[in-house]
Amino acid sequence: MKHKVVIIEDNIPLSEGFAEIINHTDDFEVVNRYSNCEDAIDNLTYDNPDVYLMDIELPGINGVEGTKYIKKALPKANIIMVTVYENSDIVFDALCAGATGYLTKNLKPDELIDALKETIAGGAPMSIKIAKMVVNSFQKKPSKIELSKREKEVLIQLSEGNSYDSIADKLFISKNTIKFHLKNIYIKLQVNSNIEAVQKANKENLL
Image (cartoon, rainbow, N blue to C red; front, side, top):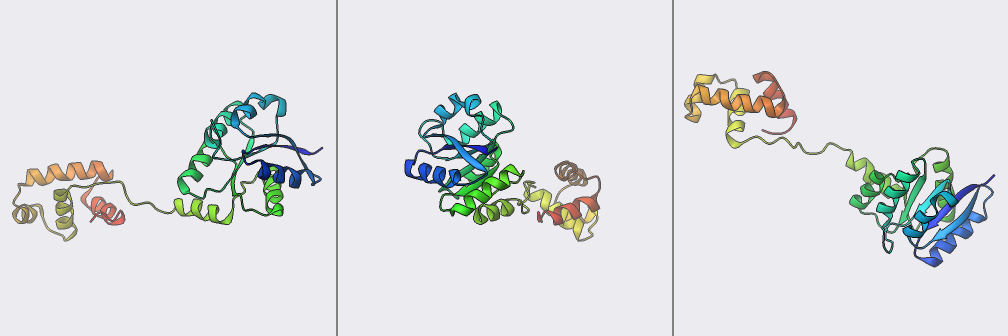
């Protein structure tokens, strides 16, 4: 039995091209093609495909919103976004909406079929460029912790081994003010000692 595919693409020549490629395989068949999400959504249970090929920029409901709707109605649906976009924000909007994979429209026929097979096997097909963008996004992001100028000054003095009395003299503040700043620093850095505070601040590149 062939796996069923539904194409949602408003570029008719492209849609027809995809259908021809898919229907010439032994493993897949296109059971329906739509130029908008609304019609595809109206026929979810009737089509009940194994894989959707979804464009992002569509008239009416766009591909990202359409993906959210389809995944809500059919949680197990596999949806591959096929689009000209390679913008990271759009990529993540699509993936967060529940898309299984993300391909660009300039893919070759064998790449399309390989993506379908990978999806059925439980994979997440992506073009090389898209995959790199996904990997890059998981690299360490800059710390969101923000210390005030005075809090940084206190921590720098501590990191240099200065005592509370010495810090008070250098910064022209009282020891109670130093303790107040440290309390806020502990809360922000989620630490419990001066040593931990200095280490965490250095690790997060806050000093």
